[in-house]
Length: 332
Image (cartoon, rainbow, N blue to C red; front, side, top):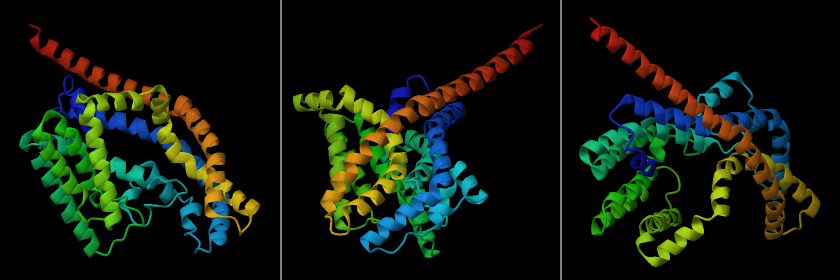
């Protein structure tokens, strides 16, 4: 988001509320259309997928997952998901067969992103990020004291420090040389804060390694290996997989769980985990990406185009009204 902010700042004034509104509309129509379609099928197929999940848990000797995650088709649950408010409530943060807890988290970040940008424009990215991070820590600590336990980190204060770490890596692009290393250090400091889940050393090291990798991808282009890596990662195949990544992530559990249950029943209890993994992966990936491609062409792209038309109509109409008013005032 920060990278896109820098790209668009030459023709978008982030001091104007219309820019924030355009940002929110674009992000909504990037996420919502395919999510709504997947949500519909997850509710319809929930009972069947729950049976498959029970078969998997039984085969693995695990306790069954909460049935409400698969069987809750109540109006409350549907409304909370349609409005993306489910991530704010521990009781509904993980209550569909989809991995949608991260979408609620994402929408919360989009909601506050313009405020963080405006703060950074006033006091700098490190200062603005630090203030936002401190606020997130206070809220997260307060929620923990109140005894609110989220089944997944769907509440923004539990992950705001990770978002800020990524924002600082992108913000460093305007600070060449050694100054960019200061942003990398600040980014790593945020990423390693012991907030929310995954506080163990392994996850801290993984987050740190990812930051270094992204920093290298962004700023290694000045060296020949960086250029070569950009050519490889910017190839047509990886770009295409990137376009399909949201759809594949959103629907893969709907495809994977029935297939995994079938593999367990087909191979029997004596099969090895590696054999099951290879077979499930080989069977799941083709239909998942095929469905993601269908969703991309028939849902995602039309949805994004509709969002762009909404922005044009909204602000063109507003500008036309303002211009007409100005002309009337100026008329003798």
